[in-house]
Amino acid sequence: MKKRVKIVWSLVGIVAVAALFGSGYIYMGEVDVAADSPHGPFVSWLLQTARERAVSMQSRHVVVPRLDDADTIAKGADEYAEMCAGCHLGPGVDDNEFRRGLYPPAPALASSDAQTRDPGEQFWILKHGLKLSAMPAWGPTHDDATLWSIVAFLQVLPTLTPERYAEMTKGAADAHEHAHAANDSDASAPDEAHDATEHGGATSQNE
Image (cartoon, rainbow, N blue to C red; front, side):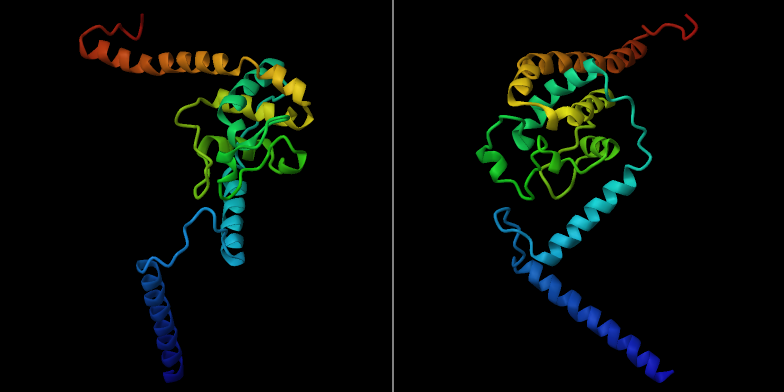
């Protein structure tokens, strides 16, 4: 019994010393947070494993819609060119100084070798983003239909030539601006309805 208690207190002491040392290491500013200095092997493994398992498990209930609709793919091409190509490139799209400064590096999604995720995982990442990376969460600013259009486009992206990619995305800026102007208008509708209710302008639910 005494031996067991001694072991427990020894473990507690080890944990306390490790916590004290770790706290001091952090407080003294010794943790390397520079984006131009890669993680060591253990930290890289830990973060990658945590990320991959989290995405896999948290996306497992995502219901994937039809992704081969031509109009959906065309919409996704415009969205991808405006929202994604700066980091993830495209056929014939040159690398850029912004992308070269990212850590972890953003995958070049025009390469079939970089397309390692299933559509459900792609949608989840688009919607929720990834912590400790430059991948933003697009869910707060884009509806699911828009995000699925990007996923649909990702399925064909590795098959496109530079010429075909340029053709599909030539009107991306105008299409993107028009689509989000419509989304902003739709988003304001609940507020307008709320204001009408507050000022006695609401109609009966039975009308």
